[in-house]
Length: 540
Image 1: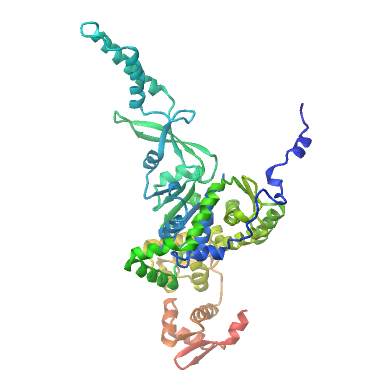
Image 2: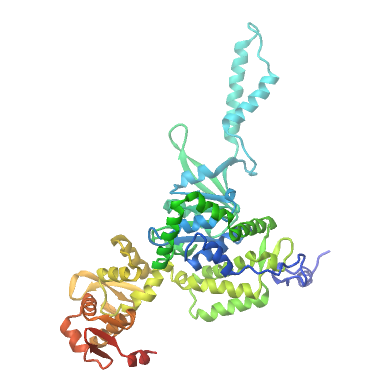
């Protein structure tokens, strides 16, 4: 009997619209595992990087769902702890699920991780073993005759049978299966560009079973095509210093950066001293740490629950969507990939608190608290990701470069000096070039020829300077630069240091005296230049 579509829809509502069970099939634990508690446990080895380590942990935890596995690209300067953070967090997860790789070419990746299967994905023997097994059967059915009773004919028949068995194996449809289902795949270095291109559909979760073709050398020295089947959705983590990832890779990954700060470096040095002084005692103390043991045990229990999906009620779904849309007046295509990362943070928090959530055997419902906590985490890195910029570069742009960059432009040397002053570390010429290109691709800056010396390029804010220069009073620009400079240094700066820094931006001492020190908001007091409180009040 055919059921009308309308009636069928009423009788079989989708899981997406099913409210959590009133009491649930499991008793709630009543204990909430907070993000502060998670941060404190991870802090035992990962100093600072509060937001980064929490987001990374929650995203890896989603590996224990059916389809919510995430892709993360760590991108920050050398020696800031990218690999350390990732590998330390992986200590809380079962090692049998981890595939940690260094630089890998496409051929090496697919060969090292694959197994031979037939078209039904059933295991298939290598040719030698396949032929050997068939010949054992043939030998049993055709015993070798005694000498003088047709041994030569038997040998010829056996050779023919070997050739037939080999031909039979060659005629089989063969695939190389790479099973990545619920695996945590970590690339310690950026893999080959061709491998990244081949993995794009996997990172996008286009299909759970993907077919890839690669070329390989044949036994005769030529080339032959191999059919690769990639099965399942893995959690993928890229650890790289390089900011020049293709846009298609950047949008497929959540961009994270290791913190670059003096307190972190000091804390890390103290911990390193403790570890290297007595490794055994240090490791024993970590093994005895109750919080670390409890978190590892929680991860194992979550894995054993085999949750397929984390659901969000209609009310909470509308709450999240409306909040996201209200904060993004001008939507871009890439927001369609950013929004799921916000959802991932929410689901990760719900899965972390699985035992205090309404659930059935395979499904768990997120709460409004999960939505709020997940949104807080996403906000910390969301803006940088939506600009396609690693967080450490976006932080430098927002808190340093954007403050001092005017329509008069800055040279690369000045940008480099600003970076060193902000992060207390130098930046190499190649890294500086990539940084400027990254900001340029995000539509924040662009380079144009210096109007006073066409041999050099200057960096301008988009919409000001260079060919698009907005006509602004140079005196006003100098006042803005001076005010920003003083604000960065707590409102006061040594007289000589002030002039030196202003000189770096191309201002002459006589112009500084004539413009800055004649401004009513600035006063000269001995050898200190101070910003007047009236200017601070006026800028609010």
